[in-house]
Length: 135
Image 1 (tube, rainbow, N blue to C red):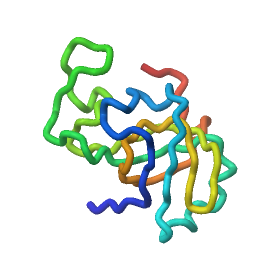
Image 2: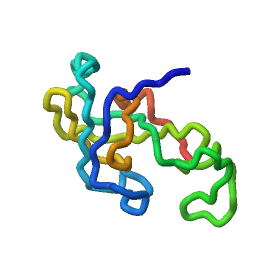
Image 3: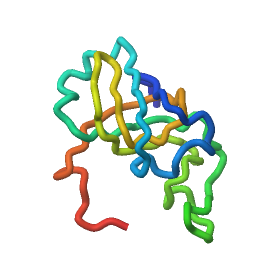
Image 4: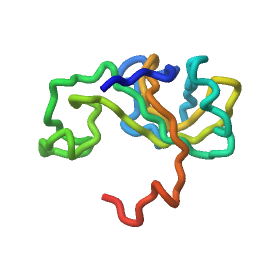
């Protein structure tokens, strides 16, 4: 498998301690830079209010298979929690699209560290992506 970043995330979060546990609870504005080779893929992006952002937690500990979830006390496997420390640290968040200027998207709701590789963007569509019951 080969994944190639389509861009880079620019945020004020320089270290793990700077980043919120969940970006959706932050008012912080983040910029997504799409590499020029992928700019044509942004056609029509402005009609979506929310986007699914997939990115790599490139500073994560890939050797971890267990973690204590945020707010928890018991250890659980990484596949049953949202820790960024996992064998393949591909993370996602749902971000609000604030502005789109060429190949730069301004969004709110991303907890990625500055310089994180951007892997993909998809429109969030509530009728498809929302579930009637969540944990």
